[in-house]
Image (cartoon, rainbow over all chains, first blue to last red; front, side, top):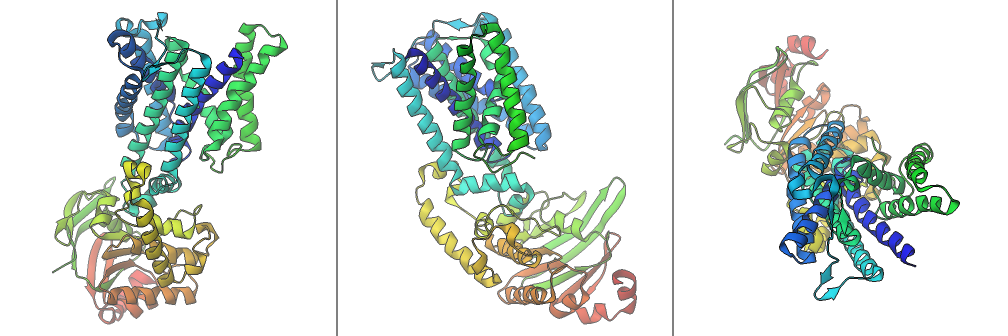
Amino acid sequence: MEYLFHILILSSIYTILSVSLSLVAGHIGILSVAHAGFYGIGAYTSALLTIHLGCPFLLGVLLGMMITAVVSLFISIPSLRLHEDYFVIATFGFQIILFSIFNNWIDLTRGPLGIFGIPQPSILGWKIGSDIDFLIVTVIWTACTCGIVYRLVTSPYGRVLRGIREDEVFTQAMGKNTLWFKVSALALSAGLASSAGSLYAHYITYIDPSSFTVMESILIISMVIIGGADSLWGPIIGAVILVTLPELLRFIGIKSAMAANLRQMFYGLLLVIMMIVKPSGLLGRYRFK
Amino acid sequence: MPTLIAKNLCKSFGGHHVLQNVNFELSAPGIVALIGPNGAGKTTLLNILTGFLSPDAGHCALEHQEITHLPPHKIVQLGAARTFQDLRLIRQVSVLENVLLARPHQRGESLIYALLRFGVAKQEKRNRQVVMELLRFVGLQKMSRNLGSELSYGQQKLLSLACCLATEAKVLLLDEPVAGVNPNLGSKILELMLQLRNEGKLIVFIEHDIQAVRQIADCVMVMDAGKIITQGTPTEILSQSKIMEVYLD
């Protein structure tokens, strides 16, 4: 049962990541490869604030989201003026920088040794100690994330995002400050990814830079693409598939070292098949240009 | 009082002078045709007036507000909207959504209001009514639910005009509004332009169809090699056989 809860909790955390990325990738059409970096900022901020300052869990999460949203401005304001392809490269560079900070700022992050002993969270006196408690918290948090993204994309704000995706020049000519919409959506997306990082840190109680590499960003992008970037359910389905299906490898008696490599191959194979069979993803309509 | 002013506008690309000291003062209401051969600088001028390009020198003003280096969205908010020669629209969404996108001051476009939705539904309902009125004006009300891609080329031109009108701009800059459109729809577009002029708008349009220019323009500006070489009424300009031969044939 614990194993099942663990898979459900991880699925929920990755759903937050994929749904938050879909806000920019699916609705604006810009692909950020720095999502794992934002996820990491949330995890480190929340962990450090809780361990060193005794900060309450929810405050740590919120501060992590705010810091990550501000950090996202450093990449979005200069690079969102660039053509989409160059933006992807810029976010890739930013992801490398963030990973280097996690890995090399030893005094703060303890580098590759990681941070352990992150306390399990408590909310208003409710100590979230068991897996079922944590599952309840992550599912509620995931529902809130989906709710936020759904409200945005079904509002006039979302209409402008889709306008930018389809024809940014036309959207500008209709009087919309497209840079502001892109910057604000990326900041919100980064903030939501950060909250997933906080949940992850407090759930696993140990973090190190290896959880926030560019491969993690690619995994999140794969979830969005496989599920369907511009639908709400698509990234949820994508996250559940990519978290649960590789777990099946455990049940066919493959050694764990080999299973890890097979998992990467499985992700790659799934992406290739999707690109050939249904480029817009399982539930999506939008195809990346 | 002039509505749209250009003073000594200059623009060059890689040493090639596309605009050279362009000057004019235009007042609303009115219809001004901008004519000239390909490469004369007409579209570049429109791009500068709407903020899609910055001039190398000179300045432009809209109702006495400097707009020279403002971004496109600011210029639209100040009251000058445009259409494009290559017909830019969002073809994957409905006709209604295309025009709704252009409505100004939408509460629901703010991140906070989009999340909390205070007063958004009410304003959205009002905007939909306004948009349906505009679609009725251009004759597309029955196609409001169709995708932009399902419209004919001429209907797409009408849709882009409706989008322009939805911004509530006083100055409309139209890049070849009737080019490639069948004669019936072309006449309809010209009628609408006349109607808009009568409602107080200033319309500047680029056009190669001399009949259309003759039919509706109050003033014709002729451009060649980045300069406005002459301007006047259609009768004055289009009777000059030299202009007709050199620039329009």
